Structure formats: C-alpha cells, structure tokens
Length: 149
Image 1: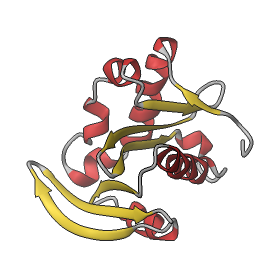
Image 2 (image 1 turned 90 degrees about the vertical axis):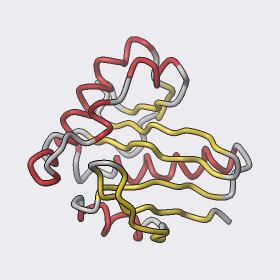
Image 3 (image 1 turned 180 degrees about the vertical axis):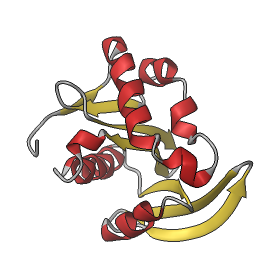
C-alpha cells in the first residue's frame, strides 16, 4: 500500500468516499456523543469542487482539503479500518504537505475532536502544533497547524 497513487476523486468515487468516511468515523459516535462532522459532509459537492483525494483500488483512504489564504485546511482524513497500520494515513498527511507547498502555502491547519485522543498523539508526530482548543457548537475541538519550511 505504500506506493499507491493518491489521485483526485471523481464522481464515480463518491460512494466509496462516503463508505470510507463512515467506516473511519463511526467508532467515535459513542465516544463524542454526536455524529462526527465528516460523516455529514456533502461528499458529492466536495468531490465536484476538487477537494477530495483518494488512494487505493478499492478506495481505502482519503483527504478533504480546502485552500485558504496562506494555508491549506485539512478538513478530513479517513482511512478504512481494514487499512489501519499500513502507512496510509502517513502517506495522506505527506500528500497534504506536498499539495500545500505546490500551491505556495506556508502551513497546513486542521482540527480534531478533543475526544479523539488517538489523533492528539498522531498529529504532533507529523509536525503539528496545538493552536487552541475551542468549542464549536456540539464539537469540542483541538486546532492544529504545521508550518512548512
């Protein structure tokens, strides 16, 4: 899996994007007490807007990104549970860094739910630093950034 292409998603991938996102985030529903926001996303609109990049055949990993002035926002990263531990998430995070650099952006930003403690261990290992913790509606979020050099 380490050498699989990461490519822009197309309309034929929308069902797989939904399935991988749901499989990745479903275990968190009980822990955080609400449906994680990526599960409610308009996947078709995100794909049509060119914001979704996928890997695998069948798709087993994806990122949703959005360009902002000065940074790339990593809206969602999802790896199907069957692909955990195979380096897919790390490859996707490196892809996001490369995409930001290609666009001349100096940092990547993201947030994760405070109850998703696995992510709070993961992101610092990839160079992210905590910016703040903030409650947004029903979501208690830890906001991160990674400065690209």
